[in-house]
Image (cartoon, rainbow, N blue to C red; front, side, top):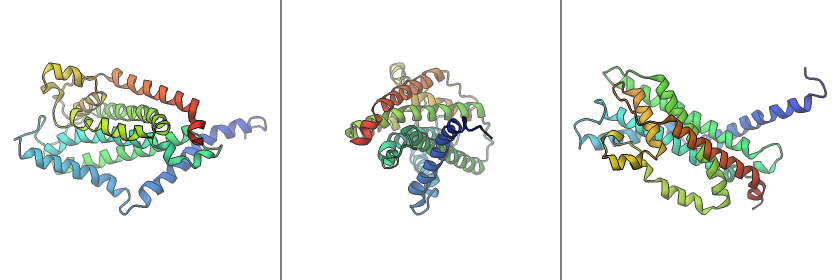
Amino acid sequence: MPSAALRPAFSRRLRTPRAVLALILREMVTTYGRSPGGYLWAVLDPVAAIALLSVIFAQVFHAPALGTSFPLFYATGYLPFMMFNDVANKTGATIRFSRPLLQYPAVTFLDAVLARFVLNGLTHVVVFFIVVAGLWLSMDAIIALDLPAIAIAMAMALSLALGVGTLNCYLMAAFPLWERIWQIVTRPLFIVSGIFFLYDSLPEHIRNIMWLNPLTHVIGEMRRGFYPTYDAAYVSHVYVFAIALLTFTIGLALLFRYHRDLLNN
C-alpha cells in the first residue's frame, strides 16, 4: 500500500484512466446504445458501401485494378479512409459533445479527447476485421495477408485521425463555422485518396499532387498488406506520422492555452 505522503500522487495517476474509462462508457451508451441496432450499424454501413461500389464498378470494368475481387479492392481503400475520417470527425467534436462534463475539475479536455479517440478507433478496428473476415470467407481464393503492413496502415490512419481530430477540436470549438467548412473541404478526399484506383496508374503530374495527401499513403500501405505483388514504393510512413505528430502537437498546445475560454463561451 502507498504511504500517506504518496497517496495523493497515486490518486492523481489513477484519475485520468478512470475518467477516460467513464467517458468511454458514457459514449458507448449515448452513441450506440440509444439507436436501434446499436453497434450493428457500424458494421452494416461499410458493408453496404463496399457492396454498392462493387456492383457499380463491376458493370464498368471487367476486373479491379488489383486482384480479381471488387469487394476486397474497395474494402482495402474504403475501410482505412473511413477509419481516419470518422475517428477524426468524432475526436474533433469532443468539446461540443462533452462540454457539460468538462465543467467538473476531475474531467479534463485531454480525458475527453482520449476517450472519444479510443472508443471510435477500437470500433473501426473491430469493424475492419469483421468485414475482412466476411470477405475472406466468401472468396474461393486464399488471401495472403501481410499483417505487419496492415497494422502499420491502421496505425497511420489512427495517428492521423488523432492529430487532425485534436487540432479540429480546438478549431471547431473556437470557430463553429469551421466544422461546416471542414466537411465541405474534405468531401473530395473520398474521390482523390485512391479508393477507386491505384496511385501508380495516374500520370506523373497528378501523382505529384496526390502524394501530398497522407491518405494516399495510408491506403497504399493497406493494399500492400493484402496484395503481395503490390509494391507501393511511393508510401512514406515518416511523412504520415510527421503530419500526425505536427497536427496533434499544435492542437494540444492550443487546447492547453485556450480550453477554459472555449468552455466559458
